[in-house]
Length: 202
Image (cartoon, rainbow, N blue to C red; front, top):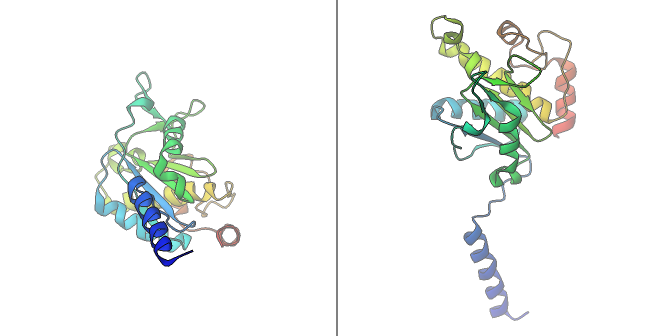
């Protein structure tokens, strides 16, 4: 192909990329999506910790509007599966390996009174509502709130990579029936789950 023709092709693809705003992050990237208002500094701290734990780039996407479409008036809660479905349809999430949605509303699924989070094969969501001490009528504790948020984020992302619930009560993949379970287990994988996640994410 003549040199001028090659330049023309390059310019064409550059224009197309700019026109559609196409981004091509590494296939191994994780995207964090805020749904409604959540503090920037809080999310940035979470981003850095998730990069360390999962050993892959983590990016923060654009903030989505409040999930009014998922609200159940009688329960005064939000249907987590509806929010997951909405996230899956977002074009921004398509080019990332995994997506973690974060919402500051109480979540539920029909079979349970509440859930701290939920995950599919590629997309997960966590709720901040029950991770706050204020939810239980106790004084605010920002450090504990962040620790719980990291724990539930790692847990739900672990599910997206194929990890099941772990019987070890100190493993992050242990099922949290209450906030006491979340506080006891923390954000670390047990040796078995750590081995599995390394094998899966390499």
